[in-house]
Image (cartoon, rainbow, N blue to C red; front, side, top):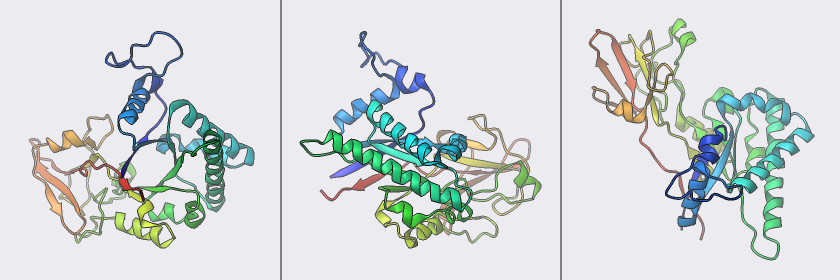
Length: 308
């Protein structure tokens, strides 16, 4: 049997999450009903019985909200209970905790305690549902960094006993910002698996992150390697490993970020870096600026095989 997991990120838009109506399925007029993307996912789960949907909590934008609740037993318990409430009310199959990132040893220890509290709360709710029959299994995962300055702070072995998955955020490796330009840092791969043979073309690698977590005690079948659906673009550069100046405005409104579908349609050919297992597209524009567009990784689904 093949199980497929979907991570729903993140509950911040009530209109899209639970209010948007679709005429094909949303005909209810009475009662307090759930619509939007979450209803559509639950309808899909009725057809695909092995589909699991986990709610991602946190993320880059909201991770500053972790610091206060994780610092006390009461805060961790409140957080865990709110996770159970969201599982109960929205039909999720588990929780993915995405804290970017614990800043020191004290926060790393509090992270372990938080995961223990969430695991206990999810198991208690499952036991309650399974009274007199088979209890469901609610999954608990974390989204974790692939950069050594962040992952070396984590208490990996202590965290692992509470977790079903480790989602490695193996992207955004490149030096890509105003401060990086001022420092003269080079245009580099942002989601490479391995080290490039091109000097200065890679900063960190996905394979190093996988090896670190595995050596720290995480079973390989619990590690999920995250891939981006977007590329990054550098202007006024000779290519990989060279300094750049400027980030072309992307379709998302954020400079230098290019959506998968848009980047694939750019008038340039792909250059595959076999050593790094990544590809890039250098091209020359009408205004004679040398640009390097990093092509995003191909869309993949996270699939795991159960023991049954």
